[in-house]
Structures are given as structure tokens and as C-alpha cells.
Image (tube, rainbow, N blue to C red; front, side, top):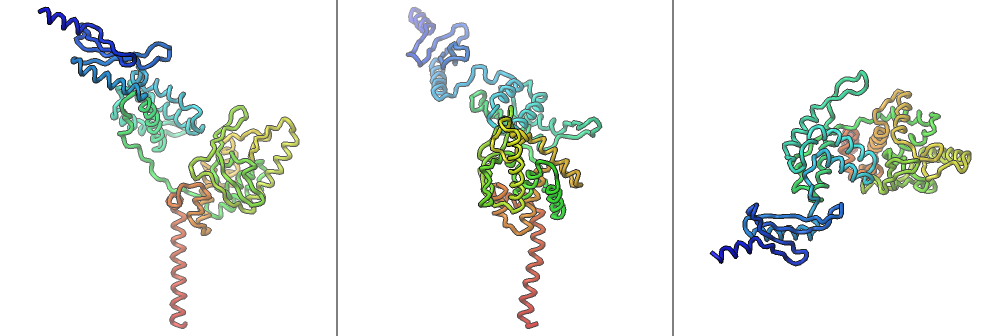
Amino acid sequence: MMAATEAMAGKRKLRKRADGEGSIRYSETKGLWIGRLMVGYRLDGKPDIREVSAKAQGECRKKLDALKAKAAGGMIGDVKAGRETVAAYLDWWLTSIEGTMDASSLRRHHDGVKRIKPLIGRHKLSDLRPEHVVTMLAALRGTTYTRGAKGTARTLSPRTVRYAFVTLRKALDTGLRNGSFPRNVARVIEAPTVPKVEVIAHSPEDMGRVVDVFEASTDRLAALYTLAVYAGCRRGELLGLKWQDINFDAGTLTVHRTLRGSKDGVPNFREGGKTARSVRTFKLSTDALAALQVQRDRQSFERQSLGDAYTDHGLVFATPLGTPLDRDNVTKRLKRVLEAAGIPSARPFHTLRHDNATLSLLAGVNAKTTADRLGHHSPAFTLERYTHAVRQLDDDAADRLQAALTQVRRKASGS
């Protein structure tokens, strides 16, 4: 009887280990062995102590050792991790990614969070399951909205639904890396597909009219529009060009950066371009170089007129004050120019880029060179994206082959 009493007293006794090793004790109230370990300090400066428990002392020790290993490997997250709602977590995540990406990507993530929160925002992170994500996607596909006061109801596009899903997946990836939860439930769901839409470019005749309109335009950004046609650069690449990127002697342009946006007149650049192949140097046509010369003379006059009031960031295309151009405003201006010419376009800079690619392929420029000039990741992507031009080239190839065989046959027959 005495021996049993001493054994029970031994269980109740706090079993301490060396510093950093944690401690194990038996809780008579819970009927469990409790292991405790200080893994660091919380944000409020207080010790961050974690607990494990088991019915057997040996099992509790194993759990404590596993906890120590996680702590040593930096795998211990916030004690409250996973307990917050999806909505609260997504709000925190948006704050955490500020300044880590371009303005358009950040805007898409904000839009995605705005669509996600009403559907699954009330769930706790730890309770989020794959079926919740599936239900969310179904609801997004059926979501309708109205554009304009008299607009008709529309459903969200497949691309918008996919953007929302990608936002959730990226946000949960961050939590997974931080140890907030054991798995990213969005990773077990197949991402929504976006149907491939063949690019519709202007005909060569319309493209010729576009260039005529730009050359005759009094718009101070006419040189920008002309360069968009001849260079085929992305809008952000054009607005991020600096004079040091133009070599008038060699007749070349080098794309180094993209303009993300600006704040208080100070440009925010993404150096290196959109993709690894975005940084590139290529020759410009005579007309494109002439347009740039006009732009340089105009800007020189503006700089001299304003004197110290001119803010010089070295930009090729800037406001009359030298500050960066607003991307959306530039797009609206180009749309108005095209509409006045009877050649409207919903996404004018994209359309001019497509025009450049299409005309290059039709002019016989090989796919590798066209892809390099556009900054595409591969010639295969270029050919797939511009199938309309490839089909026309295929038709021309058939005619040329027919002509060549006819000529050979005539020579062989002596006729």
C-alpha cells in the first residue's frame, strides 16, 4: 500500500528537465501526462509556452520531443494560427503582400478577396475543407453583375473566377509556410480553366490606317502610340522606357523595366520586366526612330520651358511636368484616338501588340525572332497565340509549293 502511494506521489511530482528541454507532469484532474515547452516569446513579450498531452508518460515524452524538433526547425507558428476566420486571415494577407508585386497584380488580389469573403469568409481556417472551395467556385460562376446604369446582367468571366481561386491558393500557401495549418485545401482542387481565346488583330490595311492616324494626330502621346505599333511592347514596358534605353546610333531599343505605377510623382518600377525573357534589345524601324526623335525634341522644349519645375526621371514618355504617366489615362486617350478613326478597341495596347506580332509573321519574320522581340517565353507560345496568322502563312505556303512544283515539272517536260 505504501509503495503504491509513493508511486502516485511520484506521478504528481513535477518532472523538470534541463533548460530548453521542457517539462513533464501528471495532471490528476485531467488524468493525463502534460508536457510543456517554451518555444520563444510572443509579440507582446510574454513567454510562448506550448503543451502536449498523453495518457502514457512515454507517449507524452515522444510528443514533447516532436514539439522540440519543430521549434528547433522554426516550424512553430502563432499559437492562435488557424483559429481566425478566413476573412480575417485574407485581410492580414493583403497587408503582408503590399509592396511585393506590381499594382495590377495587387489590385487583382484585392478583387479576389472581395469575392471570396462573402462566400467562405466566416469559416475558421482550421475548419476550411476542399468542399468549401468547390462550393465557392460554383457560386462565383453563377455570380452576376451589371456594368453601367443601363447595363445588362452578366456572369463573371472564367478568368475572373480563376483569379479569385489563385488568390485563395496563394494566400493559403503563405499560411502553410508559416505553419498556420497542415495543408492548403486549395491545392487539392483543380484550378478553374480559362478557355483559350484566339487573338483578333487588325487587318494589315486597318493597321496601315492606324499608323496614318497616329502620324497625323496632334496628341502629345502620338509617338507613344506609334512606338507601340512598331515595337510591340507591353504598355508598362513603354511607360517605363528611359532615354538611356534608346540607342539612336545603333537604332535599337532595350527593355529593362516595367512601370508599375507612381506615388506623389515618383515612379515605381519593376526591374527586369514581366518575365525572364522580357529584358531584350531589338532594332527599331526608321519610322519608329523618327517618332522618338520628335518626342525627344518635344520633351526638351517642355523641360526648358519649366526649368526647375520640371521633374526629370529620364522617362521617354512622361507628363508635361516630367512625372510618370497614369496607365489607365493613357489607355483611355488611345481608345479615343482609335474610336475617332473608326477602329475601336477595348484593350488598345494589347491590340497594337497583337497587330505587331501578326504583321511580323505575315511579313515572313520567323517565329523565333518574333517571340524574342515580343518577350515571349518561347516561339511555340507565339505560334499558338497567333494561329490566325499561321493559318494564312500555311495557305501561302501551299500556293508557293504548288508554284515551285509546276515550274519544276515544266522544266522537266521542256515546255
